[in-house]
Image 1 (cartoon, rainbow, N blue to C red):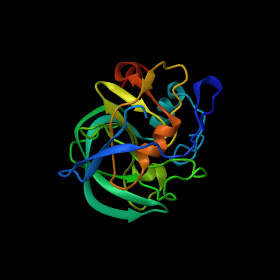
Image 2: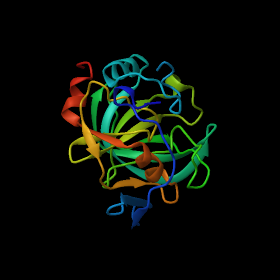
Image 3: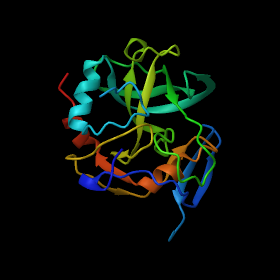
Image 4: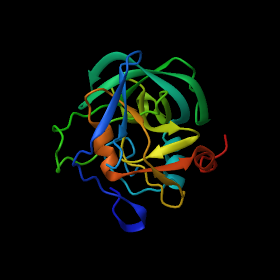
Amino acid sequence: MEGHQRGRRRLAVAAAPVVAVLLAAAGWFVTRPEPDGPAPLADAEACANMPLAERLPQVLGLGASIVVARGELTGRTARDGPLHHEMTLNAVRTLGGPDIPDGTAVWVETPRLPPLPDKFAEGNPGPLWGPDGALFGLVFPQAARNSPLGVTVIQAPVVDGQVVFGISGGCWDTDGAGGTPFHGPLTEIPGSGTYARAAEAGFTAVPLSTVERLIPRR
């Protein structure tokens, strides 16, 4: 979990007000703040303080792929411990690891946490996407995580050529990668409270080009 030292932040879940705009076609919400207002990498909820420069090569060693894509929820859910939502990946660009074709179905963890506000829930508050569904993802084959669901993904939103890192989807340590604070809208699963929880810890936007330089050449 990222603390105040070396630019890391810890979740303090006291929900910030948000304005939600329904994206009916995708079944999602875009949320924004109101004005003024691994070690085991297979476990998305386990926060390891591992900078991206170390983490990205390690996930490739586990057989994962690193992609940018657009995700669309299928409406299917299933459990492998926590609840997962299925989505398909389109407009995929594989940055590292085995190629991921368009139309690949993946499962993203969507843990159910106590209702907001809740000061004690820590860890992964669930997935977020860019307003257009864009994401940066670590795509794990079934063998890498032993998930009965199949292929799984850990993701961060992509907005305007920047990867928006925070606590959503697991842990992202941007130490050494630079970046700037991000306060814009992101997409969440309706009713999840993911954006409000993650915004309390803060977001850091890192240019995608910078992240790509941290991935070993294919």
